[in-house]
View 1: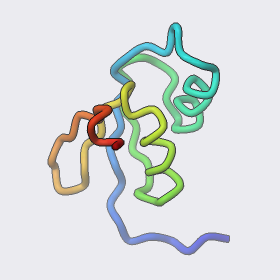
View 2: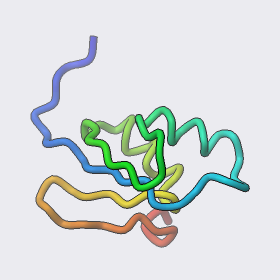
View 3: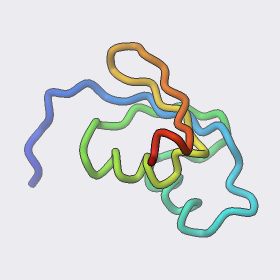
View 4: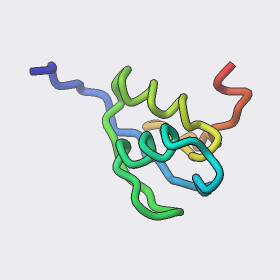
Length: 78
């Protein structure tokens, strides 16, 4: 069982459609708990979740715990 983290959760909003993208991107969106476009969920700030966010950064908007809103762009992933 993984140790519990004291980090605050990340707010993730699905902003762009997965139509025309690979099935892996659609699966990652589902694994993050997103089901509808423009839906926002809170997920734990773990390395595993950060990796998933990086894989589909071009489809999401992520709000950091400090309240800073970071539009996930391709420049952030390089």
